[in-house]
Length: 268
Image (cartoon, rainbow, N blue to C red; front, top):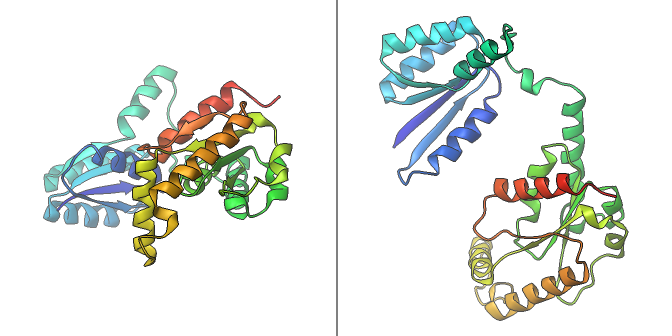
């Protein structure tokens, strides 16, 4: 299996997401390895020597010009294929802005008000997952509503990492949604729906993973059809809730749609 080695003088999280997203375009398996906060010459040399031995592709995000120059020399010595994710962009921005970059690693993740806001939002999402605390629904920036396995939890977590306090409410066949949901500004509420064939496959896989019988109603098409019909009935009663079909969509795609709609129609 071929390897992509990511070297960063900060966390490298953004670079890793970019690389993993790019690898999804290829059917060949790829091992992605992240090495974060690499700031010593000895560390760089060891990693690049290892990359040479493994014939890895090296993707690096290093903001310090001297360190990038060092990488350039080592890369030439070890004959390694590389991609500089930050260098070209920083150079272009420096020319465009007519200013020199700070060259300080990790500025994106500096501890500031935004950092603490995101931490608070993640804690809120965890505490208010799957309808755990209905009394907190009016405090949420966003509320996601849908039946089981419509990506409510991963979407809540993803959006929380962007600083939004997100709660999610499960729709259960034969059970009315919590009364507190009616107290939430409808511009903050989003319905999630999924096509029955896809949902059945997801739930059957879930049952198998949990070691539960495959003939459980949870994974049966008739029961799923009834659940989806119930969800659509709830959504019809709340015409102001945007409804998003999550079938075959990545979390990032659905989150982008939610953010776009949320920003276009701010709460009144």
